[in-house]
Length: 607
Image (cartoon, rainbow, N blue to C red; front, side, top):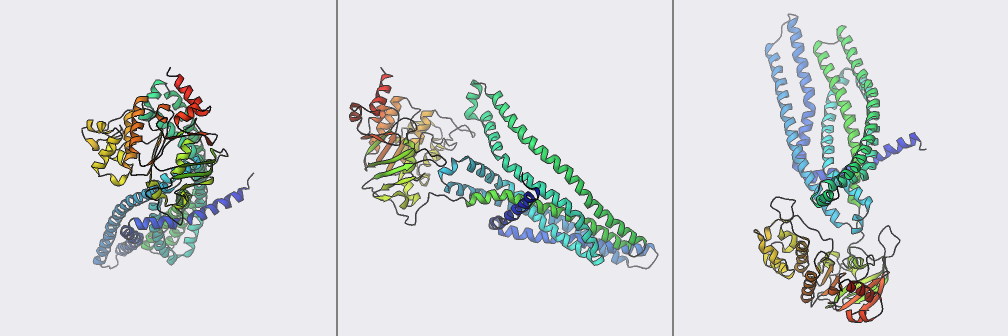
């Protein structure tokens, strides 16, 4: 069992370590809106000294009234002067407060925008393997939350500065009369601060533990309320089951949060009494001094106001500091996300891929297993693909066909061996320029709820405004007839997520996706079963056109339909991570092997 003292020391150590990450956040804040940050800091400093000035004005007013009450001579102009001063300070305080709110809102918008962009850019730079790791998904989920949740932390930091200035000003007044009173106030507030800090850390720990559960809650909520799942939820009457799962997880989260909140309430209420004792003890002491005529009525008013303000600011400062220290623990998730670095990146050589290719692609003893798995998907795989070839990859599910495609596109690197492009290792090329030479459409291509223009242009976003290129790509993929039916043509919104959008059939979506590949002027074109939802005749037409349009390119396609596969110049049959057979359709059908067996099974279903 863990030692409580050791755990507590570790908790404080974690807080201190997390606070070291704050400069990165402040730098991002400053670069988001430097002018506005400067103005709000100045406003907070001014707002911090205003309460002391108002207390002093009130002291002078009360002392003058006390003199007048005794029948002693006084200058009425001085009285009204101080009334005017206090009125002016109160008005200034209101203006400062509204100014701070205005600039805080502006800074929050700028910060959220800049941080959101930074998260998107960094996520885009990371490896595909990261996105296939559940632990990374939890980290990414927390990082996304920080892009909005940490705005409250920045506001807290601003208020902390202002409260510190207020406390410093009021403390100067208290010390002027009795330094011991300030020490009493600090000592009485400290226990409550320690308790709040301890439970805030426990809250972070619990939130961290609950991230996977909250992600599951979001998933069940999406299953039960999204357009994509609505048909099956209704047909299979899944709503009660989803509600049961959602309720069970929600109850688990609420129970743990409630237990922590109950303990925090009990201990917080107990130790908050110390702060009350400190304040009223000081108040009683000042009242006693006033009764003995050791201070004026104005000084009593000033000191009581200063002590009340200092006591409140002390509690707020400790609370804000504790809140910032513990929010910085959440911030650490964001910082750690930004420190995540991709393994797949350009080497120091950063070579430009050859155009045109002369030798083509070569797999040289390539082995590969996915991160976290010992199973070799590819085992010392070797083959060469020449420019102008049209190659089909065939094999049962799980034999590594899609993995080959991912390795060619450098979404992964081989675990062993190497892949060569014109005799040069793929890792020696600039990764972005390499991918510009590769056009890939996967079976699980994305159906963007965007305009038809954008849906096609994702193949080469630089041609977004090139109508001629977009229409030409749509003609090559047989999607032009679809676009011509749309009243808004390329500007037609696709999908039902937004108003005015139209939904497409599976086959229509696939033609739009294929247009992306044709838009990209790549030397290597790869189709990884993107036509699975098409009927055999439609798929045959798509691949027939694909073969015609890739005469001078290296074309690779994956399909389970042999009517399509037989159009390839060359067929590679994968089995157990290796090339089991290599040849043309006729050669492989005549040979006694995996291909002929698969072909016979499929052909028999059409007899």
